[in-house]
Amino acid sequence: MEKLNIGIVGVGGRPAAFLRAIEISDKARLAAVCDLNRDAAEVAVKDIDNVEIYTDYEEMLEKAKLDAVVIGTPIPLHVQQSIAALKRNIHVFCEVTAAKNLAEARQLVEACRSSRAQYMMGENSNYHHFNMIVAEMVKNGLFGNVFYAEADYIHDCRDLWVKTPWRRKTKDSKGVTYGTHSLGPVLTWFRDDRVVSVCCAGSGRHNFDLDGSPAEWEDHWIMLCKTAKNRLIKISTNFSSPHPFTHFYYLQGTNAAFRAERAGGNFLNARICIPGISKEEKWDELSRYEDQYMPEIWKKYGEKARGGGHGGSDTIIMLDFIDAIYDGRPVPIDIHASLDMTLLGIYSVISAQQGGVWVEVDDSRKW
Ligand SMILES: NC(=O)c1ccc[n+]([C@@H]2O[C@H](COP(=O)([O-])OP(=O)(O)OC[C@H]3O[C@@H](n4cnc5c(N)ncnc54)[C@H](O)[C@@H]3O)[C@@H](O)[C@H]2O)c1
Image (cartoon, rainbow, N blue to C red):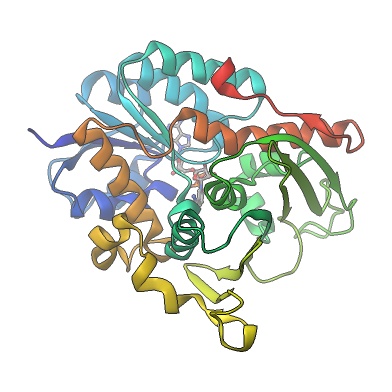
């Protein structure tokens, strides 16, 4: 079978991180790229031969004979660009988040149902190898019954508000509007369950913008999620405070606990405690369990991926997507798994607008 023709839109920004995976793969080639900024697109692909360069997305979809497109443009463009590809039966790998609101999410589900192509949201945090090792350990029963998880995402984006003003519009509204990096891994640990209700509250406005003006958004948001099986998840986000980048995860089960902090691509202090196994019932390094519970996709591509973005997870996730499309299998994060992560953020806004009340969460599988 011929290699898949892949196109990338927004290649001047974030999705350049996926070029390495396409280069490594023997199942795909980069056929075309698109960016409003042609110079940025040319720089991104300067070392790759025979790549068509476009500045108009629809023109790329029409002319470049793509099998799949990677969408890495600002969030407000995700749904319209995904639908444009799905209508042409071009598979979609779209950056987070999948949709901005419920109306958009419904349009996306409808487009997926009418298309022969598949849709996957590229939540790379699910592919961090420690998060995947924990998922394997949960699947193998080491945690017993998992019942509580939390994840905090603290990223001072005030310089990015200036460089990419669209971010301010998505992140400054009420609620946990950019929570998929935290929710994604947690939902893989609670795989046999689903979140049925959320509530959300903010800390009020205390910070200042980089130019000294008072912040227009609330600083710290917390969302609580209740699952059908009576488990609890706490997610918090903070994008406007002086604090080093921190992504903290904690998982508690009846037999074991896990905690880790991510700083950039690396995990710091990834620890696990399994009473009876961990020394003196204290925290053990998670790396002790790495060989035994390494997920298949990391065994297959880990060595090649490690130098890639976000600890190699950017490369691994793209290779997993390419393999699924090439082999004709369902993608690993389908439209509904993508919306399981995205919809909670949308419902957190609805809760926050109503003073933090618990709101029920729709299951997109029933739409
Ligand atoms: N998963 C992660 O770890 C991660 C990290 C950073 C960003 N992101 C996501 O990646 C996406 C892009 O973020 P970014 O920081 O690169 O944003 P950005 O504002 O820098 O935009 C990315 C590129 O898209 C181009 N672009 C904008 N509108 C376009 C259009 N209509 N047609 C073609 N090109 C267009 C821009 O010129 C730019 O080069 C967002 O969805 C963001 O949420 C994800």
